[in-house]
Length: 235
Image (tube, rainbow, N blue to C red; front, side, top):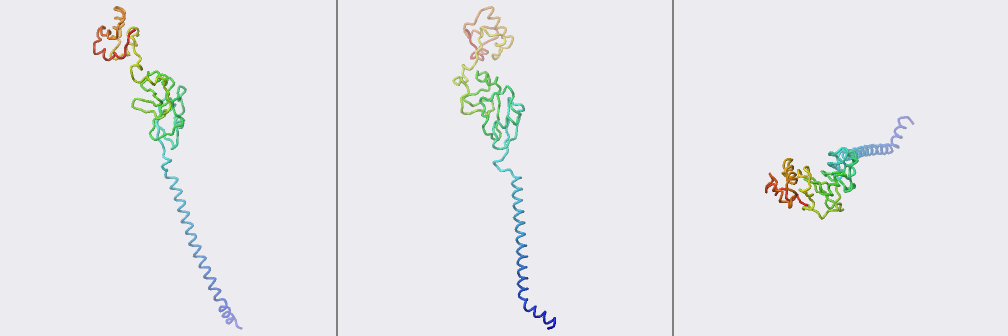
């Protein structure tokens, strides 16, 4: 048998085998191509999602801006993460001063955006209890001129003289028979000159018998008396 005949015989016998092998290889190559591209697309999508998640701040992770005032080392406006508490903004501001009093401050209270936290001193708290300050604490709520202290306790009673409101009982009356020249000058419209006139009247005429007798002092008329009548007393 010649080589040419042998080759023809081999070609006839293995023809279908070669076709099958070729088909299998084509299927493997096409399948591999689609698998590779799908894998790359999924990987790219996952990477993009992760990148966007790291760049976009979710609503519950929004930063808070809080103003802290009073007896802290560095009062000011600070940015804190969501879920921060009053204690956190105190630490952010450098911590408490030695004279700070947090007896009536809720250190564990959650902060909200635009809150104002005021840390009072021991002297301020003592003055508030005596009703000697414009800033007072009543039933655990700080009532401040134009400013609300968001850091105050809301539920506990913190003032022993709660029954005394802004009535005459809270006003420390000036006894015009015994007051010094400095104390007299705390009265509305009473300057150094009028205060001295009151002292001269006491020394020359004697004690005032009733509050309205102060109108007997030169320069103190009915108008002046109306301004101070709720702030003076005699004894």
